Length: 100
Image (cartoon, rainbow, N blue to C red; front, side, top):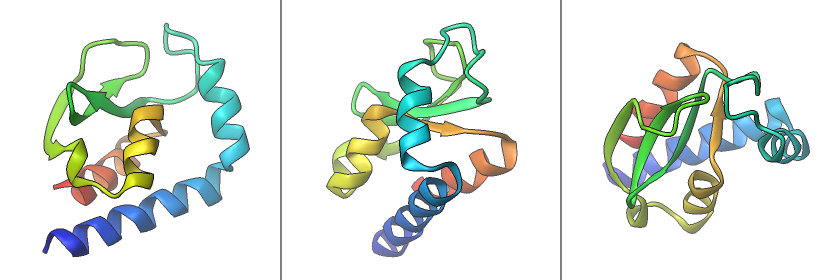
């Protein structure tokens, strides 16, 4: 079951990269405004070794998922450590489901 979830998560990440563009993501992430003016509603990031959801502009997680970072494939670990931008609630729920 965990393998299926990892594949779904990986597919979600690929879709995000295709839609948003990997280069645009890097540029926007580096220029992200700490007050949430970066254009994203949420970010999925590492929080003490677990995957967590942060509302844009906040440094405290809204939700900490029961998904240890070290249980993910290396590419997903890298993406979570960099921060995955999330545009809206629908996209957020899809990504959370992939981690559960």
